[in-house]
Length: 396
Picture 1: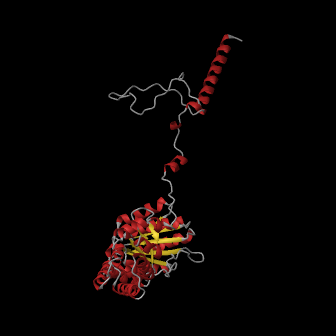
Picture 2 (picture 1 turned 90 degrees about the horizontal axis):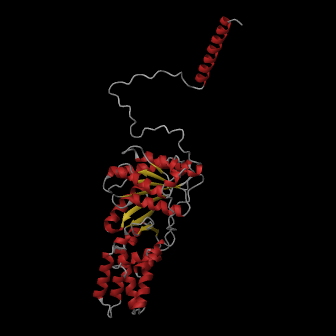
């Protein structure tokens, strides 16, 4: 091969090899090397805080065993572990007995006061007048007070009961009769065929209504009920947040509006719908507190109940009363019963009053039972009411 031919062959081979190398580089996502551009005047090319530095090739490599757990990305399991644990409320049965000492300390006027009067050496007319005053001061009401005094007089004068033990037994018997253990105090939470039970909770401002709904959810969860909460108090900005917090603590969902001032009837309707779709056992509806003398607000409460009943019957309407308000609570109860047909009473703050007679008075006035009592600020301080336990606490 002559020299000219050899030079041509070598040149072609070099060109083919260079083209193949460039094609291979581009096929791997690379780019042909370019000449570095001149630095711009005034530009800081030093690495900043947080910039990644390229590790040298001879940097030591860490094995899987050397990598600390904190180096890995957080996983879904980590987020779940960070959530607060679901609480398991106390069994409702026995709560009133467990809190008996607290109730006894607060209701000395009705129990201990009467026992002190009836244990005097001589029970004369002045003593009976003092007994009557004590009962009236305890918010027992005029009718029940007259009945109780007449029966106690009979025990003393006719039956000849004079010793402290006999008088205490007679007082217990008559108080239990007044509180009436024959009343049905079971919550109507059985529901119906293919639908949850619907419980509407109503009351005036300041009675602890939203807190009572949250505590009632705990009572029902402790009874293995699936519960849905409805935040139909749309006037108080924090009410829905407060209720949602109560529900989250026991794993109960809360249906609420995205905006303040929404139609409470619509929220209540949505909550009942959600309960039906989720096949829940109970839907608890919290309503806005309202003054009993505001006709517009009371009419709106009636509307909430009517709208709910387009989707499902209302099984229970609970009126929350502050036990410390005494006879004023009685006037509230009358108006609410006329608007929404009250089926049960929840007495809150019973541990903060010596006026335990309100239990008897409100039952006599409305003809409906006290079903639950609030005995403190703890999350499980809402107890199913029991007539005999209540009287025993008064006389403890």
